[in-house]
Amino acid sequence: MSLQGAGRMWRRLDVTVRDLPLGILFLVASFLPGLRGHGTEVGDLPTRPFDALAVVALGLECLPLMVRRRWPAVCLALVACGFALDQLRGYHSTAGTTLPIALISAGSHLERSRRTTVLLLSVAYVPLAVALSRLGSGDETPAGFVTFYLVLALAFGAGAWLRSTRAAEAERRERVAAQTRTAERTRIARELHDVVTHHVTAMVVQAEAARYLTAAPERLEQSLTAVSDTGRRAITDLRHLLDLLNPDHGTGTGTPEPKEPRTPAVGRVLTLVEQTRRAGQPVDFTEQGTPPASTGSADLVAYRVVQEALTNALKYAHGSRTSVQVRHSDREITVEVSTDGAGSCSAAAVGSGRGLAGLRARVDVLGGDFSAAGGTDGGFTVRARIPAGGTS
Image 1 (cartoon, rainbow, N blue to C red):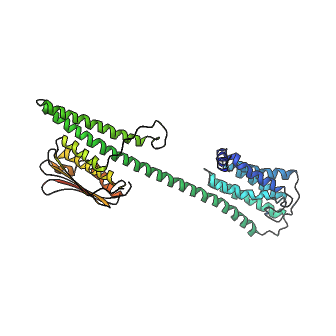
Image 2: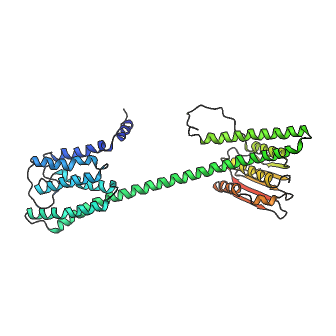
Image 3: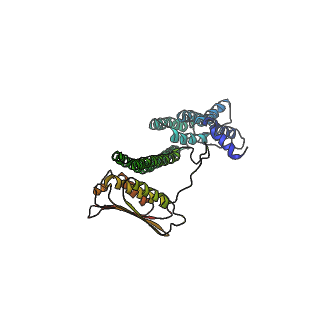
């Protein structure tokens, strides 16, 4: 078994099992001849050899460490009792070092009654110090007892600091996770808006026009065919979006589906233009320059800009002439969509605002410029400069 696999198995064990070796280590070390009588010493009592009561004191000091994270208050109480017995009997064992460890664990893992615990331990320390002072030769000054108390307080404070640091890190991770979820929901909402709004708007316009074509069967068939094609395209785009939401997407699990070759940005824009023309909107399309080999997310954002602008033209300026211009350079893609003021085009500047605001955010992420404003003639123009090579 590899070290990595052994580490995973160790982390899967119960926390009490993982903490037990620490207590056993201190218990064994306390019985070593070289360390006997050289442990923590409070007061000036002479060191005495171990007896049967020493085993009890060592057990109380060491074995409760196995529950130091699960039941920190119980661990601290038992270790404190063992430490008091250790000092009052004069064993001065190495196991006395477990008291600061228990204090650190209590400060770090104790959930409730933390102030009460500190108060009780502080009150209990006073009679212990008085008893040790009376049992000893009197050489230990009050300053020594106060110094040891401050050391214990520092140990508990270190545990409290670890706890606050851990809580702050957990809060930071939760905040980052919440921001990530919000950003992802916003991105999905933009995609749904762009896909559904455009296709459904085109279908509605085409269906409305079909009402008046009953006397022209050929044109009626063309209009209904356009509605059907638009619906199929909407289903395809929605399936692609749902694939992205699938937890197994990109992981290699699940049933693989054949992938369609990616259509270049210009080809997709031409499809949008043709679809809008079939819906009864006169659209002029102009393309200049050659797209660079790698555009990152710029081509998708350019596509969404044209899609949203044509959707607004269909909704608010149906029948007005619309111009789409796409210019490519080595560093950026420039898109301009303008609609004449013959219809109620000024309403496109208002609408719900969700689509244009989403486009502005997309372009800003890539470091580009976006503008959407009405003209003096009542028309409306959308412009976007999108740096190539960025990722959204």
